[in-house]
Every structure is written in structure tokens, then in C-alpha cells.
Image (cartoon, rainbow, N blue to C red; front, side):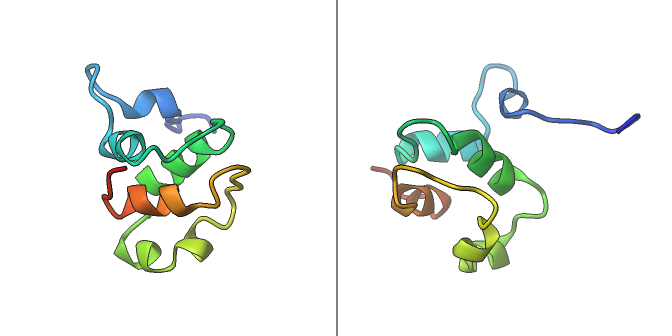
Length: 83
């Protein structure tokens, strides 16, 4: 990808402040082992992820595998629930 911009999970935060998705995952405790956290956050932080994707989360997150949470806390995070 010459000339393309690549953003990593570390690049989401700006000026020491978490990106809203990172904050939502933190607030909902939407991670355990960390295996899927970066992929889930990067997918949901993308500009292409919109309300239609939130309405069909199993399909929207199809390429991300979580080994521990059963996705409940991830869904909570994406809907703004704090645990």
C-alpha cells in the first residue's frame, strides 16, 4: 500500500485521549484476554461501520473471533452500555 494510510489500535487515541470506541470498550469491560479487542475496535471504529451495521452485529463482526466473552459485553459496548 504505497501512499496509503494505516491506522493501528494505538493510533486511534489522540493527544492521550481514548477514541470513543476504545472508551466504550473500557466502560463496558468488553474484553477479557485481549485476543479480539484490537480487531473488534478497529472494525467498529472504521468510517464504514454505521447504524445499519449495529443493527446486524453478528454479520458486521463476522471476521472477528472472540474466544472468551460470548460477545455480550462487546454488544453492550457498541450500544453504549456501561458495566
